Image (tube, rainbow, N blue to C red; front, side, top):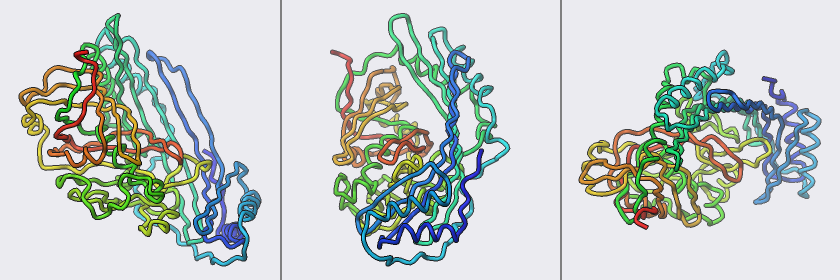
Length: 464
């Protein structure tokens, strides 16, 4: 991997001085050197490999509430000076803001990278998953395995004294299966990821990853269509946490809140969930998929308590919106690359453990839907209204999990779901995905223990 452009502190001061030369309040430089690697394996054979090298820098200048941004792929001191002067020409005035002494960001590292394992070949692991999935059933007609790796170095400095560097290595392996009985087809997928080198998988069971994906596809192939209704819904742990991410998390991000375009505007200190709900967004889980040593504004990451005993405690806020909202910075600023403007985003977002067990939740549900695996969906942050697919579902009857059902969708609003959570288990786990928004696509973890929503609208084609 090529080295990040080296800018010393004297050069950094001169770049910032150019950016502040017409009276701006804030100037920030973000530099990165990234290799995006992806590999696809179809039917046990590698069909596609990609290595995309991204290197460049962006400068952001803010005066009052107006921000200008520019980027360049020409990585040199002269190019950054030129870009800073060009952006500064958008304003008129005399330099009025000092450049504070740089404060080197030092902390106990959250993300530890084994450089000797950074470029290990994922193919042997993917083949294990492929064989296990293919051998699960003769109804598995296709298995697609994949590996992705974002190998990134960044350097951020700004006139507020920020001087921070970070190293990220987001690695993820996945398997997707298609099952068919000759008439119908169903698909299912599983993945495992982290901000880590390939040593992440040293003790991981890739065969089980493949079998789990195949089993889910086959079960859904033979499942009945879901009959819709307003019923209790038990949402399983892990990726089930997408319900929190989409229906609540996005509505807490500053981009919407600062503009008054969020269902949770003005609700700090107010009850937005049932008393048993506690939720956090934490960027400090060691080597977790959404973890960072510092965010993309150079602020050391932290654990932000979002909801405590049902009360909204914090929004997710970046530097620019902190002033607008009079809210502390939460180390949540993220961007896909230097070509994107940073804004507050989620990292690892999840409900905390409750006091029930999974078995107690099922046993105490007379009738309802068990959403074992959640799929994609959509949400309107301004209203909190959502629509989610259930990739693998089962009916609950008389306190027992019974027949599989397919085609279920969950329809509702975040504010209603949070208030209707009446049981939370103690089996917290996390799931791995990519979150898209105005600042691009970023690694984000979702998670939760198994939860029960007392009643929720469930859509389905059954009985029609």
